[in-house]
Image 1 (tube, rainbow, N blue to C red):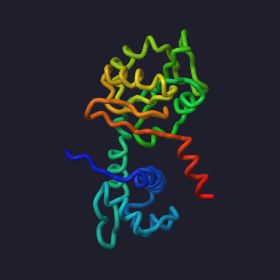
Image 2 (cartoon, rainbow, N blue to C red):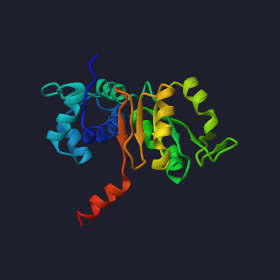
Image 3 (cartoon, helix red, strand yellow):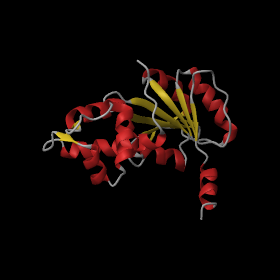
Image 4 (cartoon, one colour):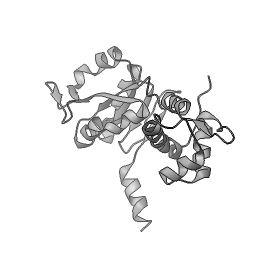
Length: 204
């Protein structure tokens, strides 16, 4: 089945729709895009476009069946079939990512972090495991890790990426300020926080 492509902005709004719909499910059978937009403070046209991208258009006069729309959104976001994720780099950034609960909204389960400075297993503030790099390969294979997060300096990023690929990881999220070499079919999402802050600085 062809994968639906949506914008990052739309992806950011889908969990908002889902949580609101779940809060009204017991007392509301159908809801219109107009009502949904009003309750969430969004534009009606935007809501229609967002929902059309993942579920098609609502029914004339009745709008969307709430239960059906919840099911569609949960399936699209992967709530019922989460992807397992690991982080390499357990400094302040890595640990903050490890403990962030919002990834679950998108069907992502952060399983553990790994760091070369860790010798004995540790726990993050939220009780997530932090392991030695020696355990990374076995952990990835045993837990069907699909996404790897790189939170190490640029000088170590390619080595970590190569190790991810060797262990069957299918996508990489990179916070190091560098450009990675990956095989065809392995998507990489780069996050340059300094660039983002510099961009904001130019807007004020």
